Length: 317
Image (cartoon, rainbow, N blue to C red; front, side):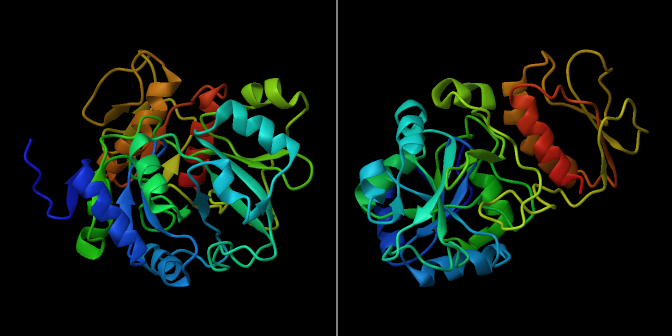
């Protein structure tokens, strides 16, 4: 299929090099990650970070996740501990974000960290963004490439639909494999999960061997995904429903419900991985079709279903 977007570029050596040039000039680039598409900017540059916040209309109190190629690259910016090293060895690169203490002389923009003494860091597993990070030799702030509180993008064209030509360069790495944002772990004191994601509590407990609470209310916003309204299509949503009028979009799961014009199935085979991949595409589709209301069936609150329900809860706020 021919690319009709003048600011979307396929992944090849030339376009990867051009993306790096843009980032070195403190410009923003739309990039694929294994979770969702992101809006990348130089994490050491106040200029880049201000552009991210302005373009997304993001609240200043909502810090950004800083992405590194590997753990060697963050030594000058944050304080690492044994729990981090264990988890890094097992899960990274991958969809896991760590909250760590910021070093006094870190070069990370204070705007990116919302002037906190902590930093959210991640080591993305997607090959394209890893090549960019390796060549750039700088960390990148990469929030999801959508307007603040809106639906996260999982394709390059989703990024275009959000920002049009306001972003001059978007790398097209295909659809994001996971489809929802990373798990966020606070490692600054007692380990706790701030945001559920693809990597679940049971997997983390196998490595850390201790109880890991999921914190539902945070006085200090140390990570993205903690504001009450998030991932929203801007349409009233009701969760745990069993039916919907024909004029209302009905998000279903499994084979129990009949297929109609207003039904959108997260996964006919009741596969939670597939449901996560489809969630934002379905919300985006419903928004385009201009439904006024959305009903969602009950999603099993196990495994990846915990993360899906977290996103739906925020979207319905």
